[in-house]
Length: 393
View 1 (cartoon, rainbow, N blue to C red):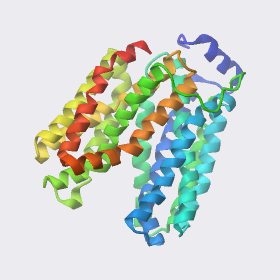
View 2: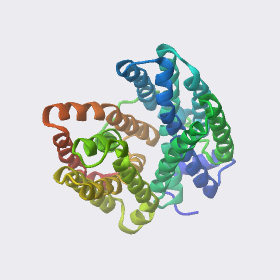
View 3: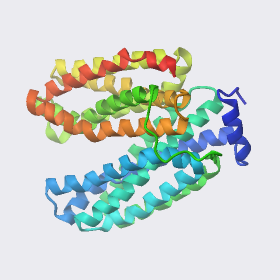
View 4: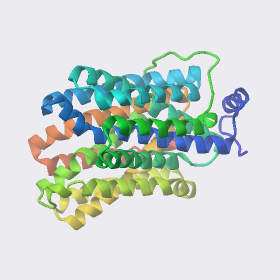
């Protein structure tokens, strides 16, 4: 086994975990990331059907969907301490089971209040899964002694594509939402059984507090994660509107830009570990941040399909390895316990997804959507300017 960066802590984890095997833990972590991405994406194709069941207007549906974000956001800071107390294996499995229990409710409930409550619990489960799987990844990467974080995040992206694709296909084949999520539950339970033994059973001798304010370099890393997620969220929520508002593409093809972005991001993450191993985290972070910023500049500078396609590709390729590197840096710093630091930057980053769409919408109202994207471009420059923080962690 390769040398470990924190022998005392990791040796204690291995000593307390009779099921530990490095190759098995790497495989299990990949499957766990796939489960997290897959589970999150299964809800997306059911949203239009839920709106029809509720007969809700846009305002009501927006409030219902907000419950998911609130549940995730509140659970994320707690998840690091829970993983430290009870181990990644127990917390990830419990959070996944909670999430699965909510899927039938999401497929059948027909009142805004009950669906919002179910989404709150579902979001809490997804939020806990997201934090714990990243804590698991940080520990396993330390054990491996080489960069493997980007590959883990690639499996999250692939899981998202698979989750939305499979549920969409099942619904197209005229299965009911309840029947569709029943098949999803069976599949996820099978994957959970596969990765069970490879998830770490670490628990701290001294229980960590349930919430600790981020401090020092963790605040800075969390701020960078917040910015990266705003950039990523702008692609998810506004890329199609930008294309159609600039008369670059027809409205029924508006998803083209995000598809280019998502494919570039997934490819970048699949190749990211090898690139980081060759050039180092600092150089990859700096160049990636510059590529993403250039991508935004291209998107707002030329309103034609060729240049905007290149811009979306550059943004996806540039952002692909930034968040994985930030999670690795959070696990390597010494200001806070790694599990709490990962939970902290997850929470700060996720707040970027929650606030980013509204922030861009407000800027678009004042300066137009190209102007709002130019503001995001200026904000993205803070990533390369802060890349020296990766050397300190």
